[in-house]
Length: 265
Image (cartoon, rainbow, N blue to C red; front, top):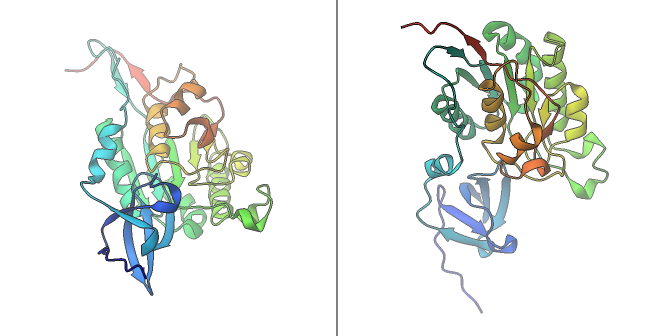
């Protein structure tokens, strides 16, 4: 008989042997021998038994942000001034929200973050849009496509895609123009097609894969720091995200940063 002597506690970092230890998780709860996990980089919630886990050491969540290439600053700051777009970031996960807000701050973007459960976003969003008047709204959190339930085209086979679609429709009802309000929506394995049809500029997940915790913020930041007279190169933008066009996709959109002259002292 094999006896497993593995001390894994809440807050520890682990990987799953059955998935070739490809994703680092944090243990967020332990109940009746089941370990509940949340991805450190990937917006993924999972569970496993201790026999499937390998404990990982020396994991620093802040290092994940440092490993991502931040947007380059090629702006002429001699005579011109720049007004990046404002972002409203709605996330059901407080830790992911905090990391995204740090990313915005490092890139000089004014962003407001709100933690709201996926099911409630569409009800609260119109009020938040009126209050903060953002140029970009990010609607994300957690999602999953339940393959065993059937067709990927049926939104009923997703954990939260229906609620994301409702939120996108609420935002698009507030502002019909895709240029005046850029909407970025979805999470891991979300119903990409329905989110785009509902009015999102960018959404996840074309190939129903997981996405990085910062992917929505990377797209929002790029648009916020691109001049209004410049069209976003969508393929190049998607290359900045963790899984490229497998994880995120969208429509051709112009940047939202205004440029002024002369620069004040």
